[in-house]
Image (tube, rainbow over the protein chains, first blue to last red):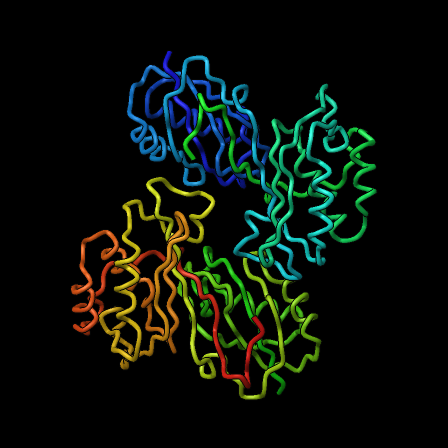
Length: 251
Length: 251
């Protein structure tokens, strides 16, 4: 059956994450409902990355099989008509049969946004976490570079059900733009809560509570859930998912 | 009595504007309540600019008289403790007796934010207005420059109760940053709804529905409320208020 892929942007604040749940609003649930209302088909949507409750996305990728043959612009317009205003389809395109947005993805980029200011920022707080203490961005950036490479990231996830905790990190950096601090991380895949636990420890480095050697020891300890605390989901955003050229996603 | 000035940032979405109303939430009302809860004093707060319902601020300036003598950092922390999360005090400082944040202000800067994209943007829609049609930014910018100078802006306000519609515009420009289009305007003061009616007509210029000569004629017509439509309040933000050196506000 023909398959359609979509890129999605969403404000995750009022959702219990991407993955379908029977009794709670989810991104997948809203999307499947919108597709049903448009096409009359009850489809199962697959996502590239299972964002947690409260986490946002600028470039989530999903796909589904459908008998409905519409041009991409029609999918975009019609699904946006049926979706709630905090979820939007940004683009649609046909993909080969058997395409799986998670399996085919070669990497994902997440960003964690921090407002580093003594007072709250009502214009930013929906999509960022407030850290009042001054942050040493250079120290955070240097520590974050230790994450690059193929490593066992067991310390950075509390999830005991994940067997293999080795991942390949291609990029990890911390940058400041005035009061906004952005931690970006690109990896082949991420462990549950990995970015939120990583930035939690990087903030400890930034406030001087841990030095870079301490960060290195934590990484090398490979003790499940050692990296604490996790920062709240509101600051996290799935920026984009990358594919091999054959499945390249227009951005 | 000593006077304190504050700079405020707020998400205006759920407020009926800055100015106090008996039966509806307002910025002034929330601020006066927070001051009362902190100091026990029932004060009247004065604002530099009366933002409308749904309009945001990054640098509103207010002041009030008080017998409470606290250092600025205490005012900031304590009021933020009592204020709801969508209003924040960013700074506090003593001002001379008789200071009036509206009368002493020499100019205000407002920005109007547009997302120029065929599909909605859930990450931006709280603080921007969506315009799906392509916009000719150069034409909009050229038209906006006609506003600069001391002019009668009667066409740009529907408010019949305002007698004098002459204002001095120091800066007016339209810029694009990828999908984000920003219209900024600095003036000695603004007429009611002036920015929202101005950007409404500039968008007509940007979509080719009006040419620059048409915009000039509209400005020169000086017919109350001729500039239509007004864009919605969610895209508008009071960026800052400028004072003579004697009252300079830390930004």
